[in-house]
Length: 108
Image (spheres, rainbow, N blue to C red):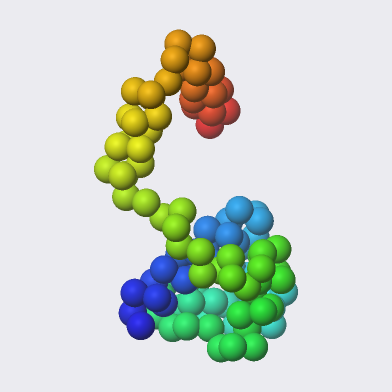
């Protein structure tokens, strides 16, 4: 269960940040102590059943999306997948990818 709590905690944290919420704000929305939310995000505990639906609603996702850990990939996996995309692209696609990456880098 330790792996599940870590993955779920990271997912909650990522979704909270995506929604531009602080831990305090999310805790207030779902009626939870901030310290308990912190424990959830750190993987120290799993949420109670009644809090799972509250979390999903507050984070604007379906309950099943809280348990979607497929987006979490290692750096080496991401690099490998990007390399495959690049290697299988024609010149026009490469130019588009380059422009997208440069726009993102500039935005940061």
